[in-house]
Length: 540
Ligand SMILES: Cc1ncc(C[n+]2csc(CCOP(=O)(O)OP(=O)(O)O)c2C)c(N)n1
Ligand SMILES: [Mg+2]
Image (tube, rainbow, N blue to C red; front, side, top):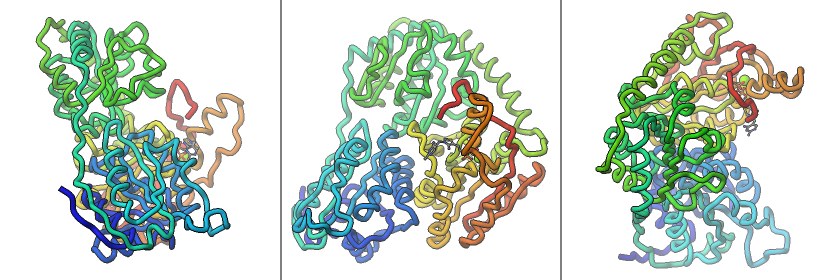
C-alpha cells in the first residue's frame, strides 16, 4: 500500500521518517536544513538541539542502540556534516541504524562557490552503508525509505543523505512506499549443524555474546541455546546483561581461565577483533556466528561460521538433538574462578583508600543504580573499571563507545538515553579528559529538561595514555590535565548542579543527591592519579 504525500522537501522527508518509526530529530541549527525543522515544528514532531554536531549523531546512535529502531540526526551543510563524522564512524563500527540527513549547497550554482559548498559523499561513503545526494523534492520519500531499509538490514549501520538547497526548499509530491519489513536471512543449515555439533561435542565450550545479539532481538534465543547445550556465557557491548548475573551459566570474571582452557569458543554477534585477541584462542576451535555473510572474519579460519538471522541460528543450536558431552565439571571450574575473582572485586569495591580508587566509586554506584538504569561509559581507565565492576542485569542498558573507541560520546549518548527512557536512571561515567569533549552539551540537557547523572573520575590526567607512555619512555608528555578541576562548577554554570567528592565515605550520599536532583548533576570524584588499570596491551 502506498500513500500520496505532498509538501516541501522537509515535509516529504518527515512523512517517510515517521512511516519507519523515527520519533525524534537531533540537530544543531543551520539554514540549509530549515525545511526539516519546519516540518517537525508543524507536525509537533520532537526536535532536540545540541551544541556540537557530534552530540546529535551520538544521541541518534544511542536511540538506535537502545531502542533497536532508526535514530535521526540532521546536520547542516559543510561543517555541520564534517563535525558529525566521528559519530557516523562510531555508528558504522557499532552497526547502529543511524540516518544522517545533511543540508547541501544549491546544485544549480554548484562550482560557483556557495557558502559551505562541498561534496560530502566522498567523506562519508567509507563510514556508511549508503550515501546519496537526492536532487529533487519528489525523490525524497523514496530515498529516505530506501536508506532506512538499508540501515535496518543486518548487518545494520548508518546511512547518509544530503539534499541540495533547492531540493529541500521546493514543493513536490510522491508516493510514500509502505515500509518494507526486513526479512530474516536464513542461515545455511549445514553450517549451523556443523557449528551445533562442534559445541555439543566440546568438552570445554564457551560462548561470547556481543551487541548484535541484542540488536537482532536474539537474547531469548541465546539463553535457550546456552541452557540446552549447557555452555557458559560471557558478554560484551550491548550483549552485557543478556543473561542475568545470577544465572548459573552467566560469567563475567573468569574470562582468562575460560578463554585459556576452552576447546571451542563460540563468538556470537561481535567481530573477532582486538577485544577478543583477534579470534586467536590458542588451540580452541572457533565458531563465529554472524548476522550477515559480510561479517565473517577474513583474518582467521573459524571451524564454522554460520551467517544469518541470529534468532534462527541460536534457536537451531537450542534444538540440536545429536550427541553431547557433559560440561558440568567445566562449568563448576569456571564458577570457582568466577567466585574467587568476585571476592577480590568485592574487597576492592569496599576499599576505603585516600585518594579514592575507581573501584570504590563503582562499589557505591552498584548500590545506587536501579536494575534498569542505563549506564554510559566515556573515558579511559575510569571506564575500563566500569566494565569490570558494574554488571548490567538487563540487556540494552549498557552503552560503551564500541570498537572505534571514540571519546566524546558522553552527553550525546546521555541525551539519546534520556529521550529513550524518560523514567529510568541515566548515569554517565566519564574520565576528566573525556568530559572536555561534550560537557558543554549539559546546557542542551538543562534547557530541554533532560536530567542525567554524570560521575567524573577526576584523576587530573589522560590516565589511559599517561601510564603507558611512562612505562614505554620513562616520561610522559601531553598527558596532564588540571588536577582537581571543578567540573561540577561547570555544570552548575550551565544550569545544572553538582558537587566534588574527595572522601570515599561521602560518595554514597552524593550519588543519592545526584539521582534525586531532577537536573543534570555532576559528581566530581577526585580519584587517585597513581592508579592505572591493569591491562596486557596498554595502547588504545
Ligand atoms: C577522540 C579520541 N581522542 C583520543 C583518544 C585516545 N584516548 C583513549 S583513552 C584516553 C584517555 C582518557 O582520559 P580520561 O577520560 O581522563 O580517562 P582516564 O584514563 O584518565 O580514566 C585517550 C586520550 C580517543 N580514544 N578518542
Ligand atoms: Mg583522567
